[in-house]
Length: 187
Image (cartoon, rainbow, N blue to C red; front, top):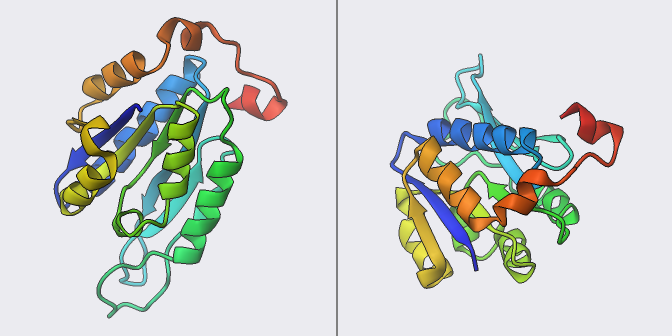
């Protein structure tokens, strides 16, 4: 079981989102087949928190994951139906040919056994390495879920790249021709 968590503290989520997105872009440009999701955060003009968009790494499909609860709302503003849609899309792209799964967050839903947990479990069953962001507030839940198999990484591009290359059969992943459709050629 190859699991790695990019750990970060409160307030660092957007930086880790950007780091995981860049990791996916870099590895894909080198021929890796990537599944999972990353998160893009866009500012909003209505005074509400940022607009969260989940991006499926296999298809490029973008899913708005923000529940509009108004400018005075407190707490999580995740649209759980949109999250489940993203999970289903990511699971549908998971095959033994995938080199790596990247998931933007092991959050409250995953700690409760929902969210991306089925994707993580399916990847583990297929022996596909999983890289995931884990906030300090969910670190204990991550350790309970991953046990001794979960490696903790700093939010550092070189540390992440090194883990990815060690976790994946690097010579095979590096030399594989991945383009099988015009959409994949354009990525």
